[in-house]
Image 1 (cartoon, rainbow, N blue to C red):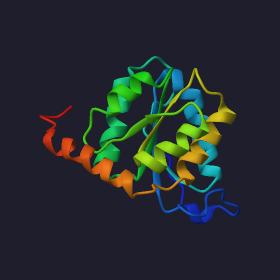
Image 2: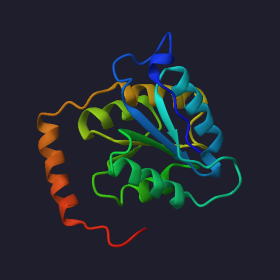
Image 3: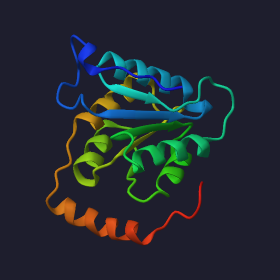
Image 4: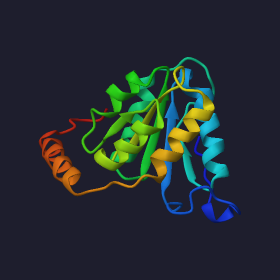
Length: 173
């Protein structure tokens, strides 16, 4: 089930610089509660959010939701994505299989800042059993507000992008 909100509906946005961006979010059962908390935080802050599931905390397989979100980001249906599982490791493995995806597991704001500045991260990965709601909100805020620096970092991303061009996704996943 998708959740939508027009950022112009918010009177006091926390992120005035990038509100035209659309963010997708997904989790497995272990990340469900944190996902719901982050959705509320993002909507309150004026972001457009697409909730890709699950709809409850019943046991699910994390690859199903990681694949869905990675496809949405890779196909530019959304600007960036956030995925959450128990530790973040499973989702990290899944989303980084897709060309063009730069998913980064962050457990602190320092990593969230550098992964945007240096790596132009387009998927934030969190561990629902690792970070609490307050810290997760600060990580999300930092990740969303930090721009890519370009320069020498762009040169490095260009080398990674060459690998992406060699990879072909065969068939329907």
